Length: 365
Image (cartoon, rainbow, N blue to C red; front, side, top):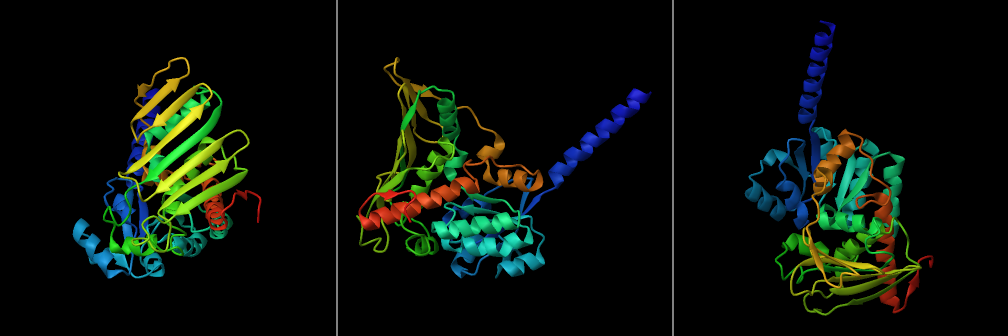
């Protein structure tokens, strides 16, 4: 009898916990509609995440997304203050200009609201440090979302490296970008700040250079380069007069180097990486396609990377787990502030190297 009683109590507890998990939604505020990646969250369907408000003043953006997603007028707010005062929110995700990420952190962090910004963290290293300092002061999580953080190939590459499958790592090459934001049809609201050196921090250098800096920092467990070299070119000056559109960054480490080719001049969309060791080679072609060769094979072997856990595949579920389940990011992991401070520093020094026409040391002021 006693055993049956305990069983019933346990069953009721399980049902209650399970039901509560499904009902305990993450009340999410969306800050900005002028980043075209905002479609990711507007298309998002989950029982755990609910958009409770959107902050935007640009009438073209508001009308576009109201029509595309059948959004009611009641979900829109003129300011972050208006949203905060009228809706209960647990976290916000920023799809405004990179320059305006700091404003989001300054407003919401003191209120204990967790934040995820679209890549990169900031337009420069000084602002990145300020954002990190504010987040630490108010003990809130500050995450940075990259598309490549959802890739099976990204995680399996690290598994192969950590398991010694390619031997001693000596070179990483990243090729990221597309034909150009104008060429692929980005919205005018997005283009206005994406091609502005103040609001974006640069052109292709920041827009796509951040991917390689982010992944290499993770693969190398937070190791910092000794020096940074960069050539940033403006090939399509008539289209992008204020910023670079084709950039190569070289990160020099004690026993390895990283080459980041970031461009708005590729003939097709690409986010791929090649990883070289003294015993093997990895070619991560895209999210799900990989090739691998060991020195003794003398031929490439196709790999289907294993599926990854749901919070790795889904940035908004990860945000849910961080806020609702106190999930802790590992230091230097892809979304982490530690990683993205290094990314910001790399991009700063890359811009400095390009402007000065010389290699810049990591510790150089």
